[in-house]
Image (cartoon, rainbow, N blue to C red; front, side, top):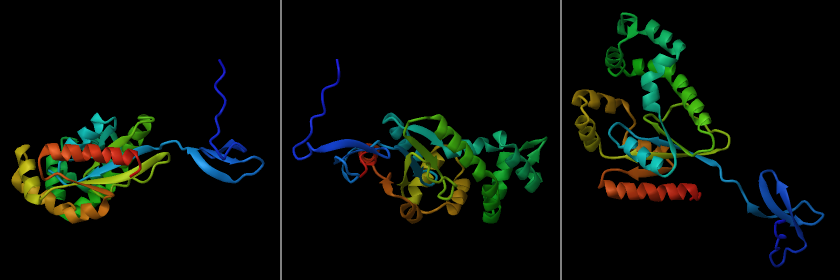
Length: 238
């Protein structure tokens, strides 16, 4: 059967429905003045989920996943960037030949070099970050119409706005002592964790970077509830 006729609201019976860009609007018949938006398509969400080592980003990313987000980890991509990007690999081999063992890059040796000297770390990031960002863009594109959360351990990864996606920055924070304890409990060396923490942004810097902040210092049930509330706020444009 044919669809029912449009039932105009009181006061707009002499109006007509029109399409202006991607919005469905009401206007006066014979005019081009947009009177009121009826419907606007909801853009996909791109959430950049940041925080230092031990802050709990991965746990919170899993909450986003249970709410329908597709999850991408910049850390995981970073661990394999030298495998899939030949240009980055060659640049690292040329810059740090002492980290090459039998034709392979010794990642532990490379880490010991760059995390002991900030200038060396900056050089490595300049080599690898564009390749990491490109892979993130490729994965987002492959996910089609889904909302996406990307775990980012740094504030300066070159991830810009993506057409058709609304970007929000969410920082996960916790006291340094707690983050250290969490990282050590996962089997990391305390000295190595402390060294990495000194090179990362502190809690204040993450709060400044973010649109929203999640305090992950308390009970997990409280954090999880707050994250679910935040997801609702993001989806409703709060």
